[in-house]
Length: 481
Image 1: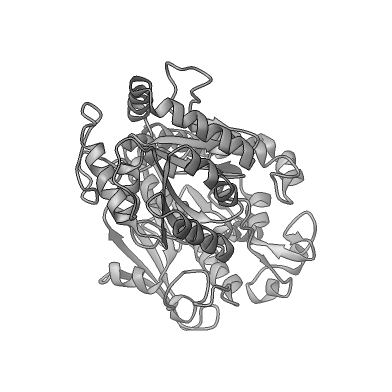
Image 2: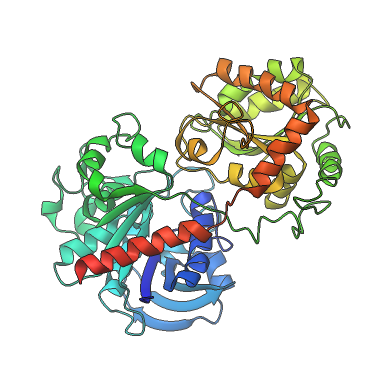
């Protein structure tokens, strides 16, 4: 097996910094790739939490002026992850969310902050760290999108490049005046390069110049080649369809394991689901819901947004009440949706429970105690919560989009192998109709247990998915040999 060295570039990595699924992937994939002969090191910004967790990291390089202030490149490790950390305090030493201020608006210098990350990624690609010269630079989402562009414009021998899209909705759009400040040539401001509706897009840079483009499910790879699904990049992706593919995400099955999970009330395994009922009772208590074995308890762990379809679920609250179901929702996001769900909880005490915010421990309990987990997204590149649900015996109810389509087998497609329920079109009426079907199935205990056992038997790990990435990297190396 030919050894491969890969530099991953990501703006967040679990368990160090997480705002979404990107962090989960960036944290789990490097560890899974070790079994496939791939040495992956991950470059990330030196946010305060990162600096605390890699205290004592080795200093590899210093700059008196790196994009406007002193900077350092460090090498360290954390929980099995090999890391490069770009420590540039004037760009990254800020509290809270990596991308937005405490008022919820983007940091005004985000363009410079993530250009700096991509620039040092390209330099590592060129041999800045002699002990680790990568064969491949793998950029994740717009925050790393300039890495393939810098390598292209440097016009010198370079490693192969991969760009992974985790969500087309986030495109890294900035004013064209930024080009000079971040060291790109002015001729890059053209329609066939970085220009995007009068500005520039870091995501477009990656899509334009990476040797291979991946996204996180086969169905999403097809969807983003349409004008609607491509969100402005459909034409570009159709033109580059020969280098675009979808590789499903996995989850870290050591973190999401109901047999060992320290965050749930009672541990259980596929061979004995008895303790799921005990977790359900604790979940009902946590969300101020009536204690009931017979009421189907629906769980939601989500950002409250239009993309996630949480307005559709809000419209379906009357159906949930009419069917004798309960809802435990954990999430935050759009203020109107937050207020709508809080109002629904006040109007339906004991039936609707809402916790605004995100709590990793509570998320595990929702998976372990809910009877079904709802993911009603209008578009969903892959989705991870439905994979966790399968792992915990919570039956997924999902829309027929993206990775949700690829990871759940609908009860109507094949009753024997089914793992959940899929609905389409993505409307409140279709969701309400499916919830009625769920309620009927729940009360058929044998059928429901079969759904749970099928889900628990599904391989949601990175094992096979990591092999696909390893094959991709080796294919790029062979093509460049």
